[in-house]
Image (cartoon, rainbow, N blue to C red; front, top):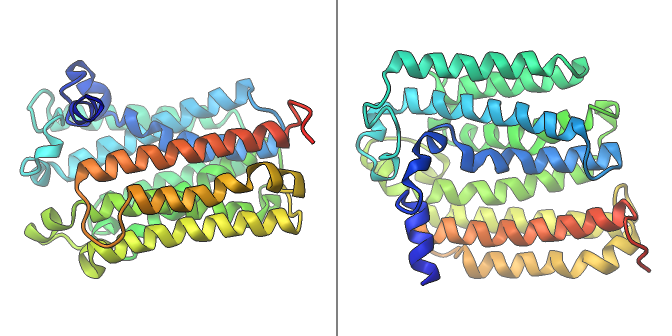
Length: 308
């Protein structure tokens, strides 16, 4: 029963009325919220605050503008891709002109909202905007250049987003580098499977990506490698008490880090090309476990409860 519900959810059959939100990429807002949340909490030393939710709004607008830009430049390909049937452009629900208007609305609003914070924050958002353009728009189209597709997502999700959140309260260059590297690794571990699942479709239409060049299996292995690197970076930080980690955090949450490696191996198989269902389900399970581990980390880091 749970598999049937999950299949209907990812195929847009459970909540078809959410088509507009899916076009705006709302299910991927959390992909941006997570590194932003991490950067904010470590920098502000608080779990919640107005600046956090204000920042979430900026990230949501930025994510939506990026997704709309992707829909615009991938329209002809999306018409051939069954998984993109929800696209309002594919359905002819809106025109290209209307899609561009939506894009500029989200993009300009995102930049205007960013002026509330400091210049470092604004520079991070401008950097994310530039990456969005070169990733999707010709003649750059980094998404079709093996290696650059991976690097673009790594810089945006793993560096600029957490850095922007940190910069709200702290000097941008003082972000703990090992923690930033671990965040980068975790996000890359979740991104790699999304490339592997599209290998056959991309090859059919002559699209070059990291996964089409190096293979789906190798891409899944790289994903697992990123998880291992992220885990051992955090364990190392805990052992040597490198901020924001310390020995108490290591004792209470270290076992969850090891569990992440095992769960990744089980639910995101590394020896074959995965199906869309496998990647979607496995990514949700892994991301949920990582979210739980991060939540426990924050509780101890902020000393919300007396532990040990």
